[in-house]
Image 1: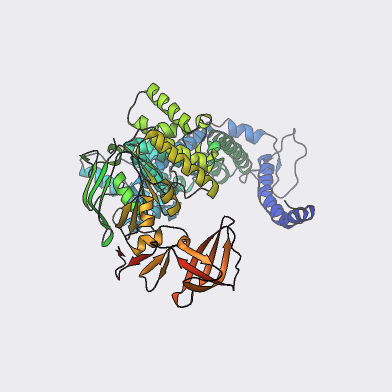
Image 2: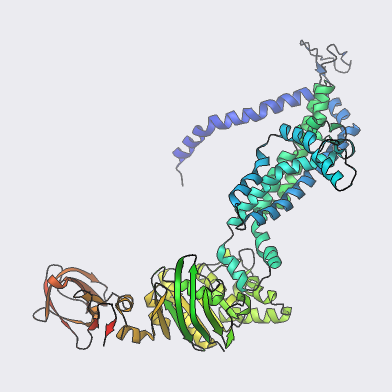
Length: 302
Length: 325
């Protein structure tokens, strides 16, 4: 379509932004990789560099090359497997809740109910609350074992209140994060529902499809693509959940990969180890993304 | 069997009355066309018969059974939608079979029926395709296939050809008419295109503002319109209406002459269609007239011509727009 000249011109025109984006991505990544290969601990400013690494750096921080040992220690840390397990649990549960709940809520909000616009606005609201704030609100207002709303509710029914963050920290985190992401799923699925062709509904009515068959054969296939979008986007963000865990102090038992990297870097002051953890997290996220795209990516084609 | 009787059927949305009250008897095996301008209530009437809208008043009787409160699927009718409304995620086969599956028919029976419907409509080679892989005409045929496979008492068509291009429309028109002949089923067909109405219908229902303006065979409507509205709506080009809406004469019923005649006029514009020539004539105090001349006509814009109405072809109307006979 385009001539040689316009194509060349186009490449020159987009070059600055492509280069800027490339640097934006590659500089932090390269630095992280570099740090992950160093013995770089803020609590140990004068490390005795191993005789195996005689090319010790002579810089103010006295860093010296560590080879793959940061990776070795990170990957053999029992906390690493716990963190991966927690990450996957969190992603899996929140995805399940937000997709299934999102479909149900979207079906509900698609009806002509009274005050629909207000209800929609209220449903969307949690998505705009910043995670730190939502964690504080959930911790102190909803889930507080003595003065929390849920404790009051439990007592109302004669049940023993749960000390959420002591006994079920993972469940608590899942509830909080799902509360934030359910609106996102609802919003996307609702817009998809509203684009369902009116005459198709009527054709199904003429064909005598009962509500469940109608949902199964027409609505669900129609929602396949938006569900894929929800899963992809939410997975990206849910792998990065940190604020809720940090603020509620649930990192000990419900800590995920980002929290483990935080522990390495800011609690142990081990920059090298944290960098190695970060790179491992990037690789894992890419593996997850690869399988995700393979599994459901075909829904996005055509 | 497929008789449908509408008994004082009415429909209003809130304060807006769409159909004030319609009475109609549709005979078994009849091809009946609802025609009228947009907003005349023809689609609403069809949807009332289908059961997709609730009645505001009156009764609908299908094959002697009061169907007024039956859900659409229980009325034994099939509908072909304007947008075809095919299920996009299902293959052609499943689209056609869906209604039968919902009715709980055994699998071999469904397969046999689908195969038969597909053969009728030349769809056998496309059964495993998705709707988006089909052309407009093929989609139309799938929509019809979905309708015939249920062997309904009557078919309802809601402007089914309006999304097709002109050539295909003529073909599909013929296919639907052939289908009507071979199935012998009652068909109700909604269109705003009076050519479709004239060519396809056994009887035409002309609707105006929700009222049945006239009911009759195409030629009855053409030759003896009951009202100014029907006179103006049926026939192409439109009937010329003269003398303060009291006299009507069709363009094809004016004899043309270059020398003498009853009415004198000046040609303003000539449309050459090959087989015919339509002349737009300024007839002085009578206003603008459209006249049809067979084949070529030698007088061009600016030329003087004389027109003579054919005997017995003049329609007279009273002040209310009703025909005087």
